[in-house]
Amino acid sequence: MRISTRFFAAASIAALSLFAGSAMAEGEKLIIGTEGAYPPFNNLESDGTLVGFDIDIAKALCDEMKVTCEFVTQDWDGIIPALQAKKFDAIIASMSITPERKEKVDFSDKYYNTGPAIAVPKDSPITDVAGLKGKTLGAQSSTTHANFAEKAFADSELKLYPTTDEYKLDLEGGRIDAAIDDVVVLSEWVKSDAGACCKILTALTPDIEIHGPGAGIAVRKGETALADKFSAAIKAIRANGKYKEINDKYFDFDVYGD
Image (tube, rainbow, N blue to C red; front, top):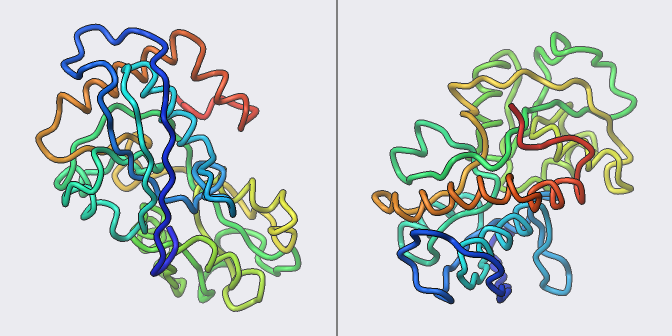
């Protein structure tokens, strides 16, 4: 997601395997919407290339389904409305499957599941979550992590940001005391030069009512056949080793979860 700016990147994907029972014609094109600003899951490089776990998984699923996929980046806050407006056919952007979102879109099965965490500056006096009382906690707006923070940290001041880049800058600059996001996103950031300011305070136990069972692929309401095709493709790449190959490129654990 980039505020007031949208980027477009296309990737033609050759079909490598059969998708039994698919009603889609071989070589049919699907437009995939993603955010492009959520590393290591999806990120738009300076040269316009989309990279990340979401992107590689999407390509593998399209290969499995024998379709050609084109990627479009979209601001996070507008990604579901853009899907509903038929700007793309599916969202593959680390979108958690939640009851609230299921009122607006249909989902495939999950393709990964990770929990939230809290990051603080390395010199922070905060030593545990109890220390967040009265402190300013940053989160990306319109996310499960923001919803979780409202519930779990009601004694903190919650500051919402359109992008992850913005809360990271404020955390580094001391304008907020802590930030909440996916544990993988925060862990990768604090290990990088850009996140050298900060550390993980703690990982948190997900709230199933807020975080849902994991991240899924969203399609327009009623397009359950397409969601089912994605679900079958997820199972196929889990079985044939392609998922593990992609997983191991990014993580030293099975991001699929339980």
